[in-house]
Image 1 (tube, protein in one colour):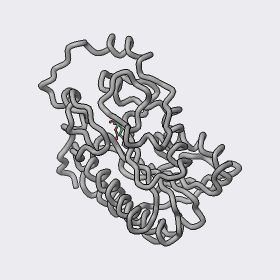
Image 2 (cartoon, protein in one colour):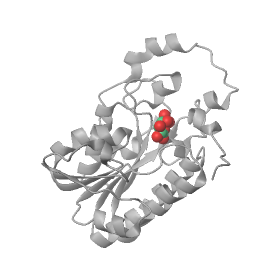
Image 3 (cartoon, rainbow, N blue to C red):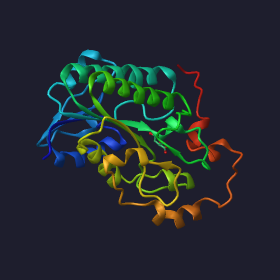
Image 4 (cartoon, rainbow, N blue to C red):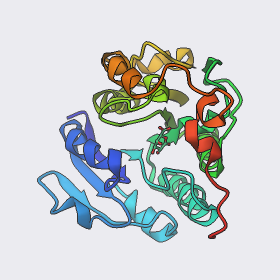
Length: 270
Ligand code: 15L
């Protein structure tokens, strides 16, 4: 396998559990982490379990020991009150990068999100140089992660590929997802391309399959060599049958790329 020890954070999450099944083939040792790993059952051959909380600096320092590369899926993955986002996605991301710096980790694949640019409209096409337009606190936290990782590249030489993940589901379920859908097979291709490309530097890439309908242009990430093999087009008929052709474009949840995320929160239950 090309990698020695690979760390997967957020291993108990929706994408994490699926990547667990796939990343083992690409490394000698797969270190799995989340705040609680009970849902994963016992560790298998070639796996190491290391539960850790992202906000725990000492635990994060230990977690990065002996790791060649990280796939960082850990953290809050939806719009949420400020406090959990602050702890997991901002404080936690700082601890991750500080631990990587001190432990000598050279490559991180960071699960960013399409919600960094969720306030672009669905009739706009953007590339990864377009200024962020986060659609909530969650999107702001992912924009922070993209910039924190950029600073660690320039100052400390840690290479990061930021994946602005669209929608990883078995199939697109609405019209928005015809553009945002990323199959789990393509997600694996994207992660592996991000780990293997010799010169990643600091790269931002939109995580989508080879969809027919799209708002995102990955021209500035071509050096990664990500080649999606799936497309949402084969689900178009069932999506169109489920959702009428003429949607109400005065509804922000329809008009914007971030979909319903643009209207979530604010939350009073801090
Ligand atoms: C995300 O960032 C979320 O993690 C996921 O639950 C989906 O809602 C996705 O975005 C999306 O935009 O569809």
